[in-house]
Length: 314
Image 1 (cartoon, rainbow, N blue to C red):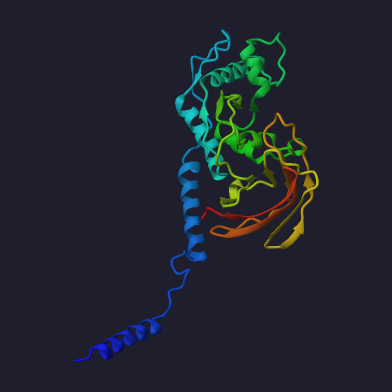
Image 2 (tube, helix red, strand yellow):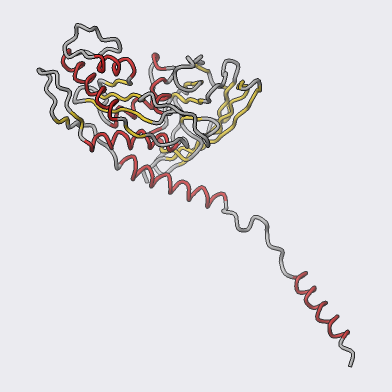
């Protein structure tokens, strides 16, 4: 008996079944944009709750400090870990490597904090006639970020905001987010908080193409400053233009251009935004940022990114 017709019938039936089966969408397995936004928002909120709000300390515990005897003492490990956690929280949001603490830098910082307290004054160029003056204290005084008002983790937040007419270069923020930094020193006392790099710099593979603050991700509204910044090693921002768009539409931004000393962090441009709208409790606002005309390696480059600002109060 000839089986050929039955084979043909079987093949035709299989072909017809395949033709009538809906084709699988190539994007079917990809996350839906709204669902992906929800996931990233929930992750950012949990990160903020656990690794920011959960690590707050502004009271120092210094063991062995004696101002009269010019003995700096040692900051508690808990405070050192908390300050390090806050610095690394900000760095991680920008895609940067985590830094570690340097014991020698920590000791110099404590010597500077003691010197400031002994003289009831702080200076980046202290005279050698000051009480408790040492070479280590002088070195830390010249190199460190210093806060005499905000204490502990609040000082780190204060430096990341970098508001005020004298901070248009965002020097404090740029040190915290310096791409080549590997080690910092932290410390202080009830009067002062200090932070400085430990001069352990290195070029690292896998760094982000740029460092923006606020970064191109979901960011809690309490951390959003009125002064934004964009950094890139070796870049020239002198002729760049910046535009932002959000709830009120698109508008040019007045730049505070800074021509950065090559020995001082990464090249950076900053800009101020007056009365930036922030979301209400449970709300979300997305800002599109465009930076055009950046010069680097004999090329002109353009950048665009989105900052998603959410209110963590639910």
